[in-house]
Image (cartoon, rainbow, N blue to C red):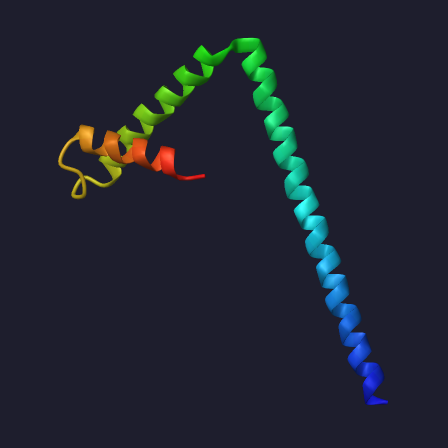
Length: 91
């Protein structure tokens, strides 16, 4: 009964889709928790805290990239420009 073996393959596909759906639900749940945390921080500390933290990360990231890729950048400002562009374009 080869036809029954074919149906068991469909069961496997359905099972794989349900596992994938569970993984998507987990990712969405994590994303929602992250958004709640950001909202809570914004309420507690305000926009200035977020802007200060973003600026600090950008400046430190540029310093690290300049140190790591000395041949690729001619100055710290080039590394700062590169870091700022990466931070604004990556989602």
